[in-house]
Image: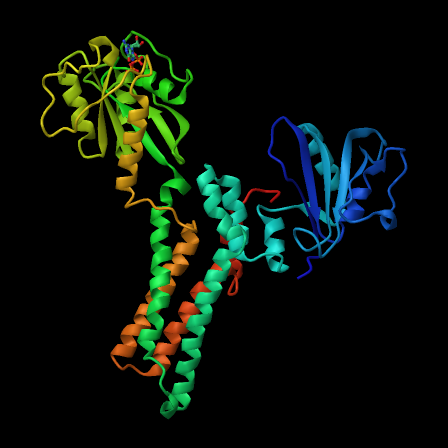
Length: 460
Ligand code: GDP
């Protein structure tokens, strides 16, 4: 596919940075960008003098005034040896948003050049056969990976292992499909082949394994929400700060200082965690506090894990039981804070037997925090149906395609067993092949591409 129009976008993140990159792709990428470029000696760079993949030092100048906008490096990658498979040009500027936007605005004055839509560079790369859909989605997942573990699992999608696995599955199923077709035409020629339902079994098992890996890798992909709760002044903000190893929340001796929720990101053993410090939960007539408590309760409902903080040196108060009622239906850990006050021996006498054993910590003095982190990870792993290392980290779209393929194959197997006409069975297998083909892009329609690329950033 050769696009007629040329697209341009800022490819680097907004904000101050050392460098910024504007990327163009399409027939006017080289000519259009050279229009604004001058070499260091102030002479224009002629199109027939450029060498693909070689950087050239120079200036971007405003075409009307010839005033310099920035000192830049210009590079082109001639088709087909580029990311998109089309002519690509890049202008590497200083990382100022103003500079980048100004140059982009100038480029967009060229009639054949327009602003790229989200993911359009990668979409063109797919349509030009430079990569398949699993590769394109892996690029998006790399950009959004939150931990090295997530990155590692994405690499199997980038280097083609996932593509090869799906392609092999389709080949196996296609073989069965062609045998079915043949036996429709020549029923006497079945030979010694295993019954069709048995031939399909290993492929269904492989698909099931991939589907299971979606849930097993979910916490690495999406992260989890951990909410710290307790009555006012038990040390919730101190614990948040201690886990972050910095002062994010205000710590105060005055009860009720955290009236709203504060959140921050941490990673424990490769699990991306958003941790929330909430308003102290207790009975109160103060309407602002009530709002904070209401928000805390909403967060509790959405939490993967709740850390319930109490004080090591006091028996549980009625407010502690009030907190307990708000969290009792969730997965929670009991943390006895301020252990430094009681020489490492929890003094609480009235912990109900049904509660889990308390983990003693001191948020102020960083005691027992590693033990708490271990308990957090264990609890999350148990909850997430046995988190496992998986070679692949499939995304929701891919999982949906796999589930569809599996359902069609199961349907086909049942139909064989029930001696249904083979023509009907063949239709199910064809649909399973299509569902698998949508994962790699071997089968695609515009709607799939729209769905995938709309979640990309502009400039990728
Ligand atoms: P929150 O209202 O539950 O968020 O409690 P804060 O984190 O604001 O802490 C309330 C008070 O308890 C502050 O004076 C903290 O310094 C103190 N505090 C918090 N954690 C500990 C601890 O582990 N040991 C001791 N001795 N004091 C603590």
